[in-house]
Image 1 (tube, rainbow over the protein chains, first blue to last red):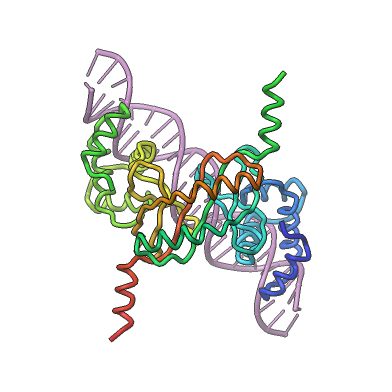
Image 2 (tube, helix red, strand yellow):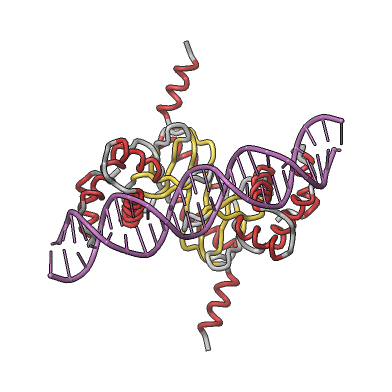
Length: 148
Length: 148
DNA sequence: GTTTTTGCAAACCATTTGCAGGGTC
DNA sequence: GACCCTGCAAATGGTTTGCAAAAAC
């Protein structure tokens, strides 16, 4: 997740006001390891005894989304989750076990997209590729739990 | 979208009962051109004066999903939509204008996924690739509207 | 001081569930 | 006839909105 400085800069760039709530939300996100839902943040805020309303969380989240410091992913279950990430085009691989996610990109994707466009006659404007699986850490802990 | 026969066969294969409601939902889906939401079907049913409850629509949709005759896609807006499709692994390209979708697949995707797995250390179990753009028909009508 | 943002609560929308009656095998 | 499926309505969970007070510029 982008650190405080990046968020401040992004807010400024976007002409948005730098408020305590927004920084607090960004901070909450920064402490998160894997993906999280809006509800997670609401609970985090409550746990930290921060006086931040649900609405503000949703609004901040939407703003951070526009600024590109978080991205929304749609879990196979249909749930909406968010992950902190770099504000450049890329894709996510998310761990179904712990929710952690990693970014990646691959030049071949452009060719695949171009080819699909040619074959279907669509003019493609955007795409989304999400991989789901298990991260190395979760595999290791699963193995150690199974062994012995 | 799979036609009546396919749905009947799929129901039978799954050991599910062939009911009027399910066929009605399948029929509603068959008349749909692009992607649709559960709410769309509910409204369609109401418009057709079909005596089908919301719950049944949701339940049928879930069942058709399991049977593989429809698939859920997550629009960039975060909405959940469905599209009728073939019950084999593939990806969708969906038109942002009319919602119509086409299926495609590309052998290179497997390599991309394998590579991402290697680079991130994840063991990938599933993936989802969605392309968004404008279909040929919508581009043509947009052009003709603009021209003259 | 003006404009944006916030917190709250209520409104909204999508989806699920409990249950008694009805349909399918 | 047994069991599955349906409709209804109510419950649920997630997200948005209206508004007056508070904060940022």
